[in-house]
Image (cartoon, rainbow, N blue to C red; front, side, top):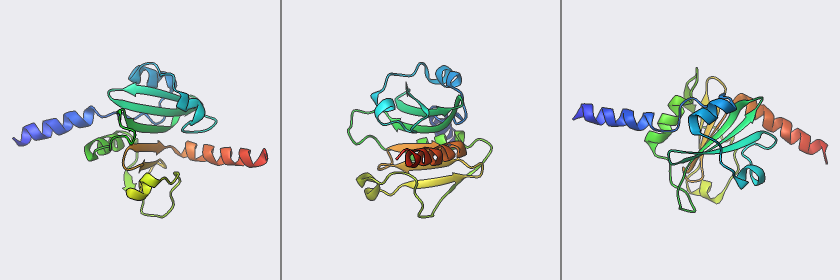
Length: 170
């Protein structure tokens, strides 16, 4: 019985959409997920302003990626559902994604009050959970556990540059 339970856990983890995508290039993402889909969100509400944003539908997930210099510097995971509020990402799925996105580092929960992600009413119901990776990456589970965002150090610098550009254009 233990062998069956362990085998099912391994299968579930391997089937989650977390196969080390941070730093992948556009071609690697296309090979992994198929062609990106046309998404108004990429134009109206990009996950990283000024970057090349692409949306993929893959095995029941909506995966949004932001590319700079042909590398994925931010990625967002959300289950594809018909529910307006989305569907929570399970602990098994979450750990599978984080494990596969860890690169050469390790994740630890960040208990600081600094939250780089927008506050929404859903975050007040269940506060965001943040992780910091020893390789400099960051992850945050937001919107009542329905969206997981992963950032590379490059995306964090990109956001700083983006804010600076907005200030200088005023």
